[in-house]
Length: 299
Ligand code: MG
Image (cartoon, rainbow, N blue to C red):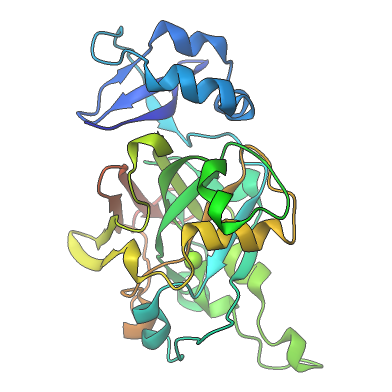
């Protein structure tokens, strides 16, 4: 049975706890060493040894109001684009050949990251055309620069589920002074609340192979995406290596690793107030995010 590290809120209290597979939240005394997830991730070398033997079966149960995003906040959110073979084809592209290096973009951490049951707020639904992207997110525990592929998984603290919500209608600009400005990644990817994350961070030592995980996403109960992470073009290790050639990776960085086939864009489907999006990865848990307009209305 797997478990994950979660951040919960009860009244004014925000705490670090273990989320068990049955949905209960418990507080093993050993977790009191760290005041927050970011603190724990910053101490990952020590934390990992303690977490490997932590007692979760008999730990005291915690009553909570809600689960927050597990890490508040990631230091950086470095997203991989076009990283699943079948997704590239559905977007009208060609799977790249030898010599391809990962494509990344950033999301602003403190304003895009929301919790596992928070609402996805859509503004101007018709023109912005919000789409879903179920993704495996990697959480860095050991920082580094120029990390070799062979060493990369040793830098991972754990994994969680992400939904890289994308404003497709804001992506392409029609009138631009030069080709370099044709695609507006900022407008498409940086919208407030566009990265549901969680429900907890499952320590990497519980995940034997990150390239053998099954992602699924349902819109209003209808299955939209279902794929194994084995369809990735660049593996988790290759993504970490490539990102660390550009930036110093730090504990608490989050790397969403790209989405598989089944996004709405290919079929003209987009998120509407009143929708419910369920995103799950076997062994990592489920996000369940309602969609509302900015006033909180669902219709
Ligand atoms: Mg994505």
